[in-house]
Image 1 (cartoon, rainbow, N blue to C red):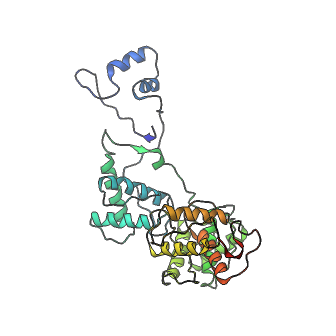
Image 2: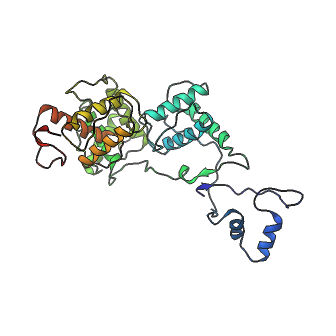
Image 3: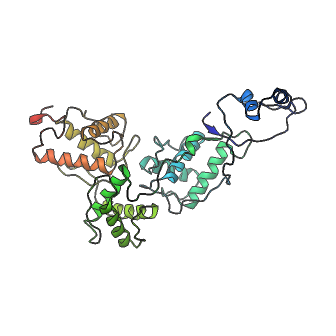
Length: 354
């Protein structure tokens, strides 16, 4: 059934006390026929149930994250936050839905948090500290009636872990690329942080660079990237980026803003993305131009996926650090009129023809 429910026990003899579902009279007959407890439950509730034994039980209100969640935060706590806000929005429609509960605190999550804070009379700062976290948790419990016998229960996708949470030597993939991008960028501003190749592999060079970065920010230099190290790197990166005006000027590219762009994003950063895509589309037939409205809709997502396929990135439709870097690199190359290598981009039209 795709949900998890505790097994509540209540007395129900089917005559003096009636309740929906399983009852004393029918279940006794099934037991006398030799059915097991699980088989009896399936007689009443269908075949698609199973009993989970020895599951850890905790209180309804868990601890708040040790580090407040805000734009750019990632991890399972962010995903939990997104899922809860989306469910709360069913009862409070003024809270906007978050299109992708992917564990990345992007602009749509920020908008939902701010609206929640406004509705429930909290400080509207977009930061999920203890006050906002516990208020979201309590409202979530209330709307789902988790303390009641007729609760909605918890869906399986609400409890399944999707994030490693830690990057270390041997890790690979998009998160490693993003980490390498941030460190490489910061190396231009901190003499104690070395430049770093962006290759998606957490090898010895990345480990050494992480250790130097940890020393720079007063952290234990263990070469492992947990939330403390990630947040320190991200705060330093955003501290630099937020000083740069985010306006489109033809021929000029700006660094990645540090916040992933995806369906539902609405910002000047999206308008920059759209302008870059439109310029590139003049030379690559796979890319259709989009209206530079600043809103990330389906047409923008399609153009992003086409671009990611063009440069051999995973076609997620989400613009993170690496996609942004490839996008701005190609934009600059085309704007300068530099010659692209034969076969470098399969959709390139020789002579700039579309």
